[in-house]
Length: 445
Ligand code: ADP
Ligand code: ASP
Ligand code: MG
Image (cartoon, rainbow, N blue to C red; front, top):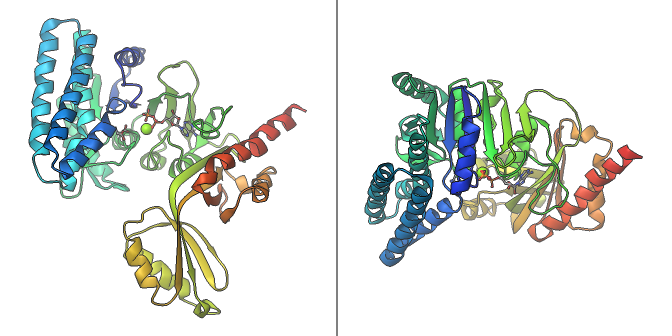
């Protein structure tokens, strides 16, 4: 069994849905297809939730009509058979009625999750109908029936495995299954979601639960690039990455992968392939446990970082001081990304500021605290990157851009710096020149 995930752009238009169909029919292997919502739809649903929060019935109605029209147009353009078309539109309209009903309830986390995951539910329903209409038999698997994720960082793979195996046994006649990414149930069995971009994670959770032969993530670019192509020209795809490298890059901002994507498959040694829906013949990136090349591979950047400086003379020569500080972060369930210390001060970064006020209040009992927001962590990643003879060039950035923190040696595979977010793009471009362009020229010479 292979798992294939198609992202928002891949399922984002009638033309692209035809491309997905071609990919699915290019071989005979059994497949589970994980679909995102059409691009832009989840953003629209997030806005709908805002309307619900403010009880703005006019905006809710407008939003839901727009959603219905968009998908209804897709049905018209995709499906030739009038009967199938009418049936699909009836189903769509029932889903929109359900959404009206949910939108009339008071805002809660569950209302939020139920609404924002509808994009996937609607799309899988339409896509399955389309495949049936062109005589490609398939079965839709309702992800809410098997995707149990106690907490986002902690999927219950055994439970997913048991439930999904049973569902597949009940539908043994099929070789093509379609399911929704992003949606899950939490520990209490309530509808929840895997955070934005979470369909990648759905695919690897399913891959691990079924011990799949591989997980393919189909998107709008030919693999994971050596730098962020949204900000830097001339980036190129990396053919092979180890799980560690991919995990670091995803966690530190490479948008192509949800931060948690590789964690479910590492122990099971299931390869993850990143492929381009619009250029299926391109090699893409293979993520596995094999190291083909050591040293620097890629740069990524993670925004939304808050730096916290904690300063106290009492720290001088005092043991147990760091423990006290870490306990505060632990107590407020806030994880720390970067950390540097001097004799009387410690600087650290967090990305979850939900409990920042409480953390500061607690630490201010014994130290002076300074907060700086809107920072970005830029990291260079590769197995043994700290031993790469070119890595020192990272530090030439110090001549041009104010660097707030440096983390070197925490891991052999990652060197990170913290900069103001307004300096992120110049930093990425500068490092691209220094670390990749110059390196390439050296090879040529
Ligand atoms: P999907 O909707 O298919 O999940 P995403 O938008 O989440 O697609 O991810 C693909 C996008 O990630 C690319 O179009 C690209 O702009 C962006 N991206 C950011 N960093 C990288 C990188 N290092 N390599 C490749 N793509 C990247
Ligand atoms: N549709 C969801 C999002 O836009 C999940 C995904 O596409 O992976 O975040
Ligand atoms: Mg994505």
